Length: 221
Image (cartoon, rainbow, N blue to C red; front, side, top):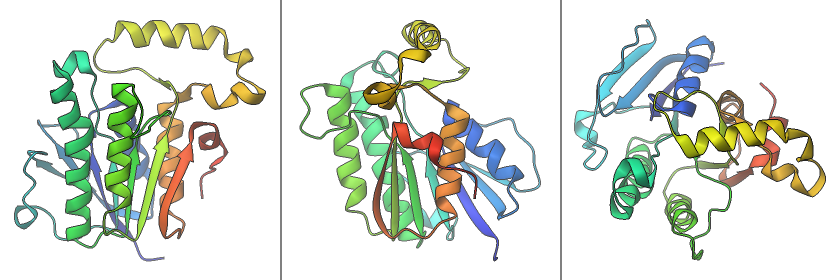
């Protein structure tokens, strides 16, 4: 099988970090290109790093070829500072990445969204994710994969009190997430990354939505 080149946007985040770790160990990928807003302290023979402005991606100054583009960009309203700033990161930056991916002929675009994403939702967070998904679905990329995890488990670089409490509560009540509640079961970040990479190994044209409760069922290819 011919080796591939992958691009990871959001490599310094929770899911993005696991994506990088797993891609570096995967023999299918000969090059892993990181798009970050600030230098990422990592060294590996496969890695090529670009400091980019996700608001103004200029294809002529960036790699002109990639097979798979993994997007794990995201923030919180508290960290962003306002709803408009949050929208810029979780919608605009992601859509810009998809546009760039299409411009260089990438075969696949795989993005982390969220459970409850709905462009018509009255809940701001869900509406932003839904509008992002709608824009991605219209992009000129052969395969578009949208992953909708529930609460993401894992150790982040920055402390988020609300998320910390939610993880503790969800962990202690994990036995309750069965049957109809299974879709709400928290998912480890490394499992999301593994599902994304495994999905990229398959040929699935069009737009594919991957709900939270199916992520653990996606086994390494």
